[in-house]
Image 1 (spheres, helix red, strand yellow):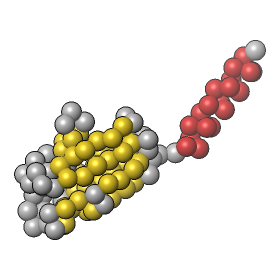
Image 2: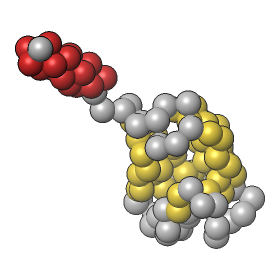
Image 3: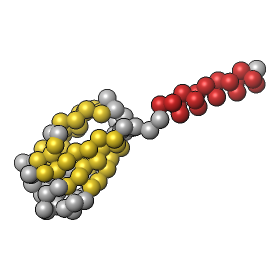
Length: 103
């Protein structure tokens, strides 16, 4: 019985290791826009916002994530944790909008 329980634990750990870390996605901030504007990811994936503009921006989704100020040539990352659709914007420039869908 102990052998069976040990084998089960080993199988679960192997399956978890095979899944590996999430993928990384890049959202470029340039020309007062998020590129891509819409992005679909899976839970555990990492999203990195890279600011290519000459002034700071944010990536902010109410009650989900808030990058704070991302300086020019700076970046910020977020790991998608919960499934859903999340509209976000730049708090400094509210016309800049994007959407992340987490599956």
